[in-house]
Length: 472
Image 1 (spheres, one colour):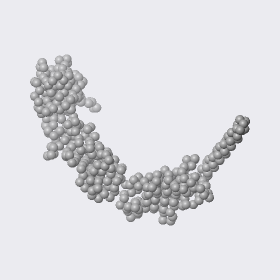
Image 2 (cartoon, rainbow, N blue to C red):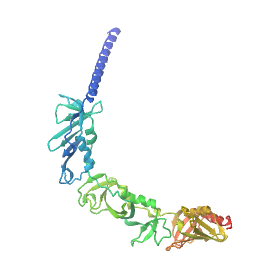
Image 3 (cartoon, rainbow, N blue to C red):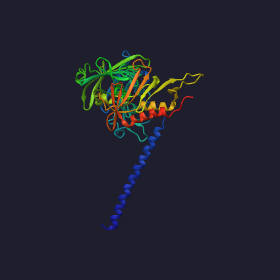
Image 4 (tube, one colour):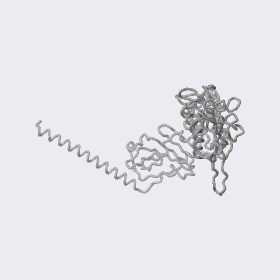
């Protein structure tokens, strides 16, 4: 074929393609214009009836079939496949509102090809019933207008529905279960008792302290088998520990009728956690969690006395099974309550000194009492003394150690306070090594502290006495 003839054929073919494309675009544009026009038509009521008349709901969303009925005697919605399955009425309420308010903005009648609307094999179907009628909705694909194609009761009409059905019924049974939860009215936790295969322990909140410890700065204590407080614990870390239980969210329900829970290892739990707490009214309450077998990194759990079983992250049990109480002990050996302070007796390298503490008596209405510090005849600068006491309070320890003598006393502070249990707290610093001094509290508690920090504490103490002025 000559070159000119080939070019003519190609041009003709191109013209046919362009014509076909223009025709398709024209048809598409007319189709979208028709849809837009349909969308602006008056609403067609497709509802099954009023909300209060809806007594049955069933839907199938990608194979997850749910069938519910309203049981007046039971006082709520019931799963028709399993009446023992707890249903959350609040979760069902928006479904009822949907079938009682569904409308269409136009329709295509006498449809024979339902495939183009996604209705040959619809993504999901919804059935709603009242005492008088049952309506079945097949929900297909979305229209270019953003609405959904819906077929009602198998008729040959396709409606443009605004999406109230699709928005609410893309859920399964898990989404309407009446799930349990740990108590939400916890105002303050007062105790945590944990029993596991690897050991038991109990923590108690003692806001007034204990006669076995020299400060009430730390209200949480580890108890021994007799219930006596043996070790204070850092409050933030205790909150993280019991938070594993109090903040547990139960969403993945695997059974609502487990009975003894044998198949989940709950007939003989490997972990039991009891949380004692006070509600906002001050009433003492408690709840208990039981942990069963592990499953793929998760663990089965239930509230004691319940037949419902859930899966939660296995790290929840791990964290409560293996707490490191040594790491939870507060390393602040001199965190004392300065409001009780009466005096400080300082035994320093060059001399001994005593600082007396008192509080002024307000003479005018609205006047606040103020701290007064004196050393013999000297009136000390209140701000500087309070800064030094803050330095004492915040003195950190690198670690707690067993009883050891150290290498000789360097300096000692005796804090006398208004306390029946501990009228005196003696803090002694002994030489230890090139990095640390040994801090001994009341001859019983031993900590390693930075020698630089401890030396600064002593030098600043002496500066309070030597650099202040005489009372006039």
